[in-house]
Length: 171
Image (tube, rainbow, N blue to C red):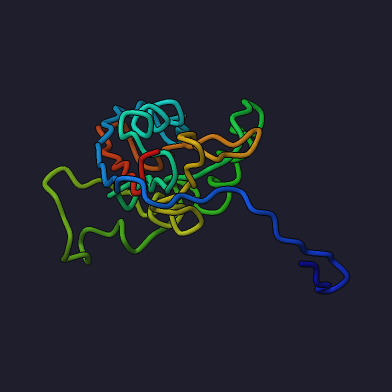
């Protein structure tokens, strides 16, 4: 089936299907101790191991950060690019910029005893995401050639929890 949309030909191609397999719902947490910000931690191999351990042959895996200053992104693991991305994040929301969130004389909610000035990290997170969902085909992550899954630390060194939730069917 082909159609033209703004002069771009689009066609469909069957990739995978699964019927009759035993359902799988499997969730595991990854705990990463970050060392700096921004920091791009490649968790692809860990996610792939969890998918393999789940036994899912077809389905999807969602990788989720329960933090508002640590993101999950799919991108290329190339050192110069990672440096470029860190620079762009700093340009979008510099660590030493002025943020109302950092004014503890006015802020009255969502405060911890060890609260730090991290308005920049929250603002940087606006341009990233809390989760990524990746298809599972033939028991493998269906990532593109250069795609890797990153936990992106935006704030400061600490332990971060990432949930890896697999939903699919066994072979």
